[in-house]
Image (cartoon, rainbow, N blue to C red):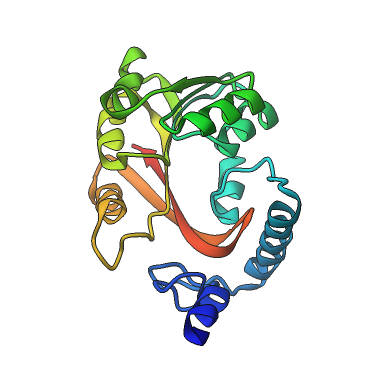
Length: 219
């Protein structure tokens, strides 16, 4: 019992050394990371105590800083999996076009309400994966893979990303021990000659722990 409580509060999950480490074991303890940890803690308290979510994707803070130089008012964005990222891209950054597919009905309704500028679709299984085929090849500036069936979504979406465009692959530190789907996705991103992968380990808004977000630029 005591061990379980300690694990919950110190590491957040059995796969982590501490909350300051990703599931790959990478630490986020540099001076800038400490400032991010304070923001992560503050937004987590607000979410838990008051139900207030920050209008930010649950990506790492270093990845969010990188996105500021990637997403602009002319950006066309497709998301596999919606949420606060949809709100951020559509309502905060006001990208030109945000298309989102979501397979959780309740989360779909919440996302559609919070992000009226986005086009949000409630789809499951093959329809979820293949919705991006409704759009031309080389159409999107940014594609976010952060929902279900991530390996299939990544492979299906590749032809629709512009040269010089970016994939966001979240949680690429997960499944590392068991070599599951997210592990496979991480390896795909790093092994392809057609992409330059940059991995961002850090704290995240709204949940007090460290993880990894990978941003891939199509060469």
